[in-house]
Image (cartoon, rainbow, N blue to C red; front, side):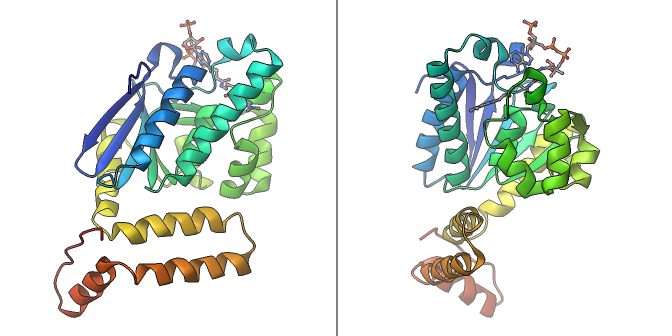
Length: 260
Ligand code: DAK
């Protein structure tokens, strides 16, 4: 697939996707979103990839939002197409079989903050900044910010961020639970890769089912979500790795998972 705005690398079981439009602080235009959609569809089919890391090119910005210059000129029809494409991309990340880690290396504003929230969790560089400044442009957040932010940090904090458009730094993002860890910028990718490798060493069927149970379960009432959890637990017993994981524990040795 030809890509003008994304970089893609594989390191054994890890895939690293870099949004690469540094002149516009990696802002998401429809071309970037289209490329992301195509790439995510391909990654979903890659059984040898266990974990995906998403980051931004350069030292200043993860993604500074949706592309304001492009949006400024939208007709209502184009705005609808853009919204639909964005929604497809963000739900593709959320529903990707593999876990996705956002390595946030600078500004994560508007659609950029929303992109981090569609990922399973976030590791931030010390210089990262988060915010939902859409109301400053007299639009609402449209890539899930009004829904995922309150689910992550609670309605009160989300409301303040969404109503004021204020930016918060990485320490505040850590305090409110928007990010899991803050590390010096130079250590960001190493830290994200170390966590990704730890995940990649586990039984991949179980990791993927855990992601599905959390993602789907959060959209269900607790009773149905617990029933879903019981079903994915049962499914684990159809996989060779379940026997291997338990045999290894009982024989006091390391498991040799085959992802089968
Ligand atoms: N779009 C386009 N270009 C951008 C951009 C953006 N979001 N952010 C930065 N740039 C461009 C700047 O225009 C500038 O370009 P040149 O002038 O060099 O050509 C270049 O990147 C460098 O930016 P600055 O010169 O501004 O750099 P500074 O260090 O001074 O400031 C900044 C950095 C991140 C604080 C500032 O650039 C900034 O405030 N950027 C805009 C941040 C923002 O407002 N983001 C939210 C965008 S709105 C919806 C779907 C989606 C959305 C809404 C609805 N539906 C489906 C309903 C999403 C909306 C958004 O994300």
